[in-house]
Length: 220
Image 1: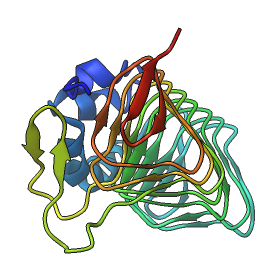
Image 2: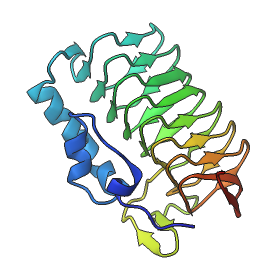
Image 3: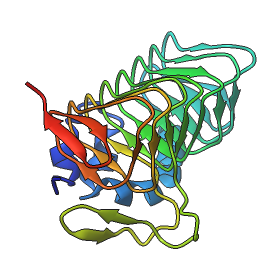
């Protein structure tokens, strides 16, 4: 396990309209309560080259949105992003450039950095996904504990988030296998892959392969 949990350790944020959000917060779960106001301020101030799709939804150039997708405000979609049929963005969603939000994928109160793929039947609630992060078909970021209590991130130490809803934290290059479940507050390190059909809780180190809850090997 690893306690490399600070934003600067998990993400290399170069996207100019998202970077200030990460710079003001030390840990990724601290971002979650800031998303709505941050997006509204972006929409108010504008982003060069971006246009309003509708009230409260700002999109960059070459964004492709299929007719059956639903986007609730506020939201910012980065240039080159594709929102496929049946996708449901429930508000408070900001993406970087060239992301893929796939068929029947649902996202709420989340940040996706550049080139994130959530392409098939994914749920991403109250989560932060780093550059080039990928979720296989049916993989989900569970964001609410069964007892309804505040989420604690369990690494070598316990980190109180003081939030009732915290989903998954995927560092840059994290790859989640099909059908996997990230329980509330799970953190996947940089360039770490997770086997399909795996249920995880806790903090997992960078450059690793996660074969099960307690089966982690370093990537060769």
